Each structure stands twice: as structure tokens, then as C-alpha cells.
Length: 222
Image 1: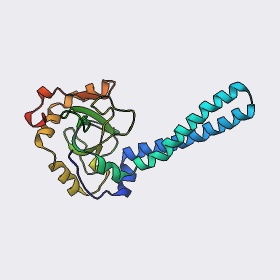
Image 2: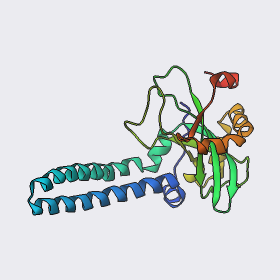
Image 3: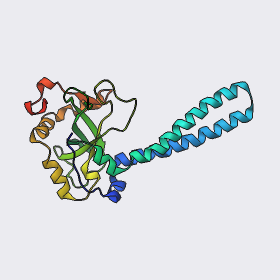
């Protein structure tokens, strides 16, 4: 797995990193749901009917699950941990609009015990890309993020993999350029040649498009 080490600017990441913002919202929703379900449990116990106790058990289980999500999420939301754990991957701006852009990224979905890489195209809609020009074809180095832990994988492939731009973790343009240079040219060219597939990736239910290994450049066949 190709790693990329750099000093993460946490203040910058808190302001612009959309993955961290999503995990933060998940934490708030989890704790909020736990409170609501806890109050519902208390009410059902107060009703003191056989059916209410059955519902109370379900509410307790739901509250425990929600509380776990709310307490576990902060560990996932540590931005330096996300960058350290991710694999450096290429992403290219495939579309721009008035509110942001769409990135097309090349990721390896294979789990560590898989027999070779399994490359796929994934997309991500972003509102901001500090340090980049918002134009089609712009090369955006990123790292992979797997938001769901379990039971989210099927067989030898991860089920949910997304791309998080390096630019969401640093203001230093030299760091972004260094990350861009550590990605092979053949990977950038593969994305550039397939920009027209971004719409197809967004339309499929899995939000990813597996690439045929036989149609990949020799350098990517593992």
C-alpha cells in the first residue's frame, strides 16, 4: 500500500475537510438518537404494560447502538489518523459547477488477503479544493477512506472506499505537489482517458465501477 506522510494542519482540516464534517455530524446524530431513544424507553417503562416492556427492550438496544456510534465516531474523525491510514491515490476533476466539482478517483478495492489489486473508479462531489484550480482535468492527489467498518466488506473487496484530497489536510502547496509526484503517470493518464465514465459511476448503485484487469496498463496488473 502506498502511504504518504505529511504534517496535517488540523485547523485547516476542521475548516475544509468534508469527511471530518460528515463524521462529526454522524457523532451528533448518534448521541441525539441515543437521548431520544433513552427518553422513549423511560416513557414505555412508565406506561407499565406488557407490550410497552417489549418495545422498551427494542428502544434500549437502539439507544445502545446509537450511543456506540456517537462515542466511536470521534476516533474515526481524527484527521491525522485518516490520512495516515489511507492509501495515496490519484483523483481528477471530471466536472465543475457553481457549487463545487466532481472528482473521479482510481482506488484499489482489494483487501490485504486478496490475490492482487482490483482497481475501480469512484466519484466524490466536493465543495472546495484549496490549492487547486477548479477545472476539468486538474490532478488532485488524495488518500482512501473506508468509513464503514463492519460488516461492510464482501469477499476480497472493500464495500465502501472513498477519496479524501490531500488539500483538505494542508495549506502547503509543496506538499500537494510532492504527493502528486509520487503517483505514477500511468495512473493519471488512466483517469484522464476515462473522465467520460464519471456519470456512469455516479449512476450505479454501488457508486463504483470495477475495471477489467485485462484492459489495464501492464503497470497496474500487479
